[in-house]
Amino acid sequence: MSVTVAIVGRPNVGKSTLFNRLVGKKIALVDDTPGVTRDRREAEGRIAELKFRLLDTAGFEDVTDNSLEARMRAQTEAAILEADIILFMVDARSGIVPLDNAFAQLLRKADKPVYVIANKAEAKVAEAGINEAWSLGFDEPIALSAEHGLGISDLYSIIGNAIDKAALEKQEDKADNLDALPLVDIDVSEEVEGDEDVIRWNPNRFLNVAIVGRPNAGKSTLVNHLVGDERVLTGPEAGITRDSILVPWEWEGRVINLVDTAGIRRRAKVQKKLEKLAVSDALRSIQYAEIVVLMLDATMPFEKQDLHLADLVEREGRALVIALNKWDLIKDKNATLSMLKEKCERLLPQLRGVPMVTISGLTGKNLPNLMKAIFDIEKNWNIRISTARLNRWLSGMTQSHPPPAVSGRRLKMRYVTQAKSRPPTFIAFCSRPEVLPTSYKRYLVNGLRESFDIWGTPVRLWVRGGENPYDDKGKKK
Image 1 (cartoon, helix red, strand yellow):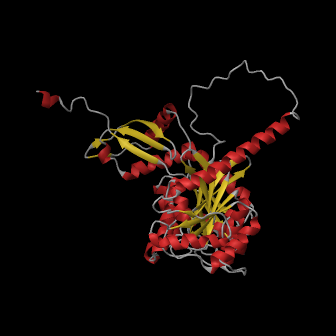
Image 2 (image 1 turned 60 degrees about the vertical axis):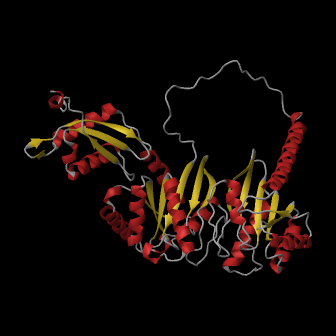
Image 3 (image 1 turned 180 degrees about the vertical axis):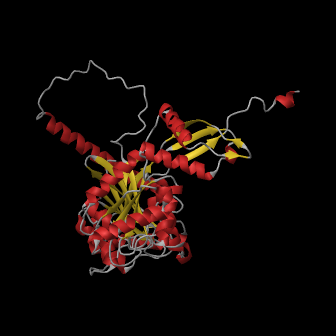
């Protein structure tokens, strides 16, 4: 992606709608309510063969105090500084308002290429607003309808020219630096052939990490401290985050895709449409994540909603790390930690051994320990065990505790194999699997955890029956 394109404008002019169309996915929340977007969001935009970095921003508010609107404006200004091209969006149906003029003055100071996008231009009533957009003092306004896809060809020309210009400048810089490079001999006669075995886990691959929890648990504060920048909005108000914001970040040479999500309250309390959309977006982030960090407020941990979220992560098959935030507010730390570990083992038996890390997102305490727990649980989530080792283990398990007899007939465990990882999933074959007690399945799962050190990640065990060659004997006669 050679250029960065930022979509800016006052609230409710259609910025997120255009963002979703250019990205090709509905990843930004869209609603008729003004001010839905609060953080700046980035993704890869595409128009035909063109690829570029696209930024969606919050609606511009002309305030400079310590309010939430002022913090949203700071996020928009940060996007303007990053951008190579600025798409200044206005509402063609309502025409130019004083807030548009105030924003235009700010953009002129940025010294960046600015193009006025007159959105909602699909109707004849918008013609007056398009003509009025000339008063902003930029080039010819572009009539566009983000909802219906009208005017995208004009954006193609603008962004295409910018990409060509950036490529030309890159070639010129490369040519200028070519003479300064020392001449070296490069031997290209030898070729390295790839291994035949497929690598199932690559520790150098990027890692998707979603941070979830109840409102005001400190998720956004943690993200900002990890990346070392005010990347997402924070504040004392609960429920600031609405969109799930993906923040690419690097830790010790590993690319981490951090996803900050909206706080998830109990379903009965979620009544407004906008909050329902935000919660749905957060739940969808859990599905696309590999590791989920569940943020708990250490001053009131393991509320009912926390347990629901942990159970949801387990059912989705994602690896879980529990982060006890605001640990700096706890006085008797040792006694509190011992109590919370015992409580976790008792309340979350389906996630035995889940790592629990005490942190402070505000001060950055213990963040290296949190990242170590994330990498350790990733290894457990990707574990592969050979069938030979599994069957030796099964033999020992059945000898120490044989399967029970049901209806006077003892069950026989034949063999076990691993079907897949992420999460670890095993298939055990036995006689009459339909009557195998749940308690014995739980015994086998706990044995897998203890024998192969698979702690803190979901473990799936499916029981299957072998084919009986005598089943169809009577039918053949």
